[in-house]
Image (cartoon, rainbow, N blue to C red; front, side, top):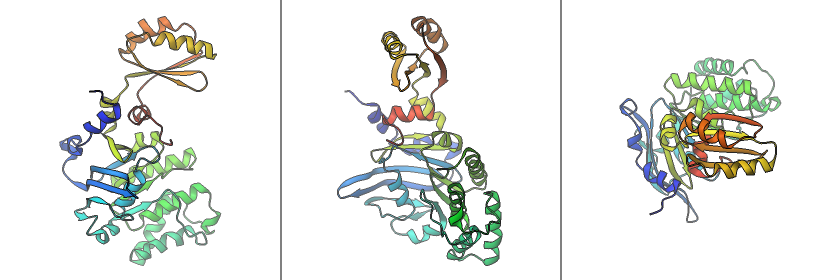
Length: 336
């Protein structure tokens, strides 16, 4: 029976319990069982099951239309599941969603701020909505705004840059000290310096015991921050584990990137590479570039590949990245 890579992955990752070693199995704050959501008879989320450990950063990745946003909207009580259920700190998503709401914070992809208010007023308003003590609101607001480098600004939020608005939205989601934080593209639109600031902030936040669920199109971000990663496609979870586990189970092997001066050189090299047994996959990219996946390590590279490829402009050798694994499992990019 012929089984595609995606089908093989779905069978392999059908039971989330098997992916947690003993050090991860003590306390789960989110347990999802056969969760499903249909729209007009079409399943956007198709019976997923997963467990998320208290205090970890869990990344949910997938191409556009994979079902990530629908999953997050269900877990944050915005959408009611068609079938299945989830327990969030032992509360049923179906029957006890009002008990779940105070436990979670949500930083959505689109900024939700009051443009006429200052940063401080925005955050304090959310704190009052959660019924917090005014003294605690003031103290926590100042602390969070200082960490995001937006404290003391008296101008209304409508004058802020996109990056400042993004950081303000993150602070607003944290004012009530949620136990679980959902981050949807938290660094979208940020410059490298601001992105690094947010990354460091998220790492510090995780160290306080907050559980973080991250959705992102930035593979470097997922790589740098995640404890566990789930990859979704077509409404199903097709891979689940730590980055090391995903690399071990789904790796293409070693990766070579060849750049050529002309299209003719690329075609000639590709023809020769296709005859090498240890070369498992050849992908043709823009700008006369080939990406080659191969087994056998340095010996294959020296004895077989370099012997065949005499003329090239540049060569880069690297190990599989999270993006390589993602492309292998889904057959498409995050933004497809």
